[in-house]
Image 1 (tube, one colour):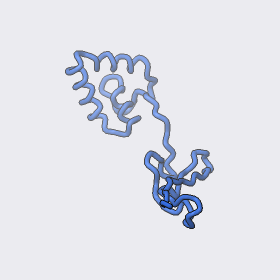
Image 2 (cartoon, rainbow, N blue to C red):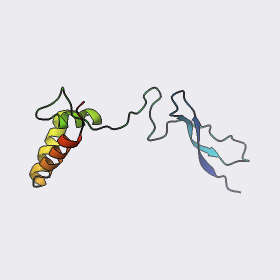
Image 3 (cartoon, helix red, strand yellow):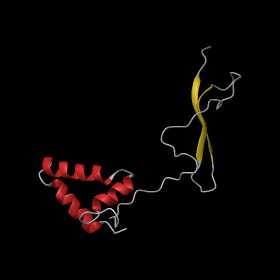
Image 4 (cartoon, helix red, strand yellow):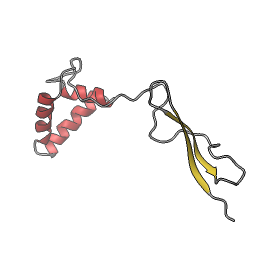
Length: 114
């Protein structure tokens, strides 16, 4: 008989209700003598304990602004430098025949100020 391996994970509930996973990896199939869930590691796509992931919320920045604060607010929401967002917006405007300006104006109107 060939031994089978199956992926396993243990999910525990945390006080904030988000849950955490541990003991991921592969365990042996039932009946083979080795308990499943003995491997360790962190599954891809999970948040480290103690750092709850806050939801993405687009807003206009009051601190990091040049015109309306759209690029600064987007950069804060994404956790990157505002200069990167501004360069990407200029590139999108030049290469996209003005699409960047339309998106900026829409975000200026729709996104609330911080």
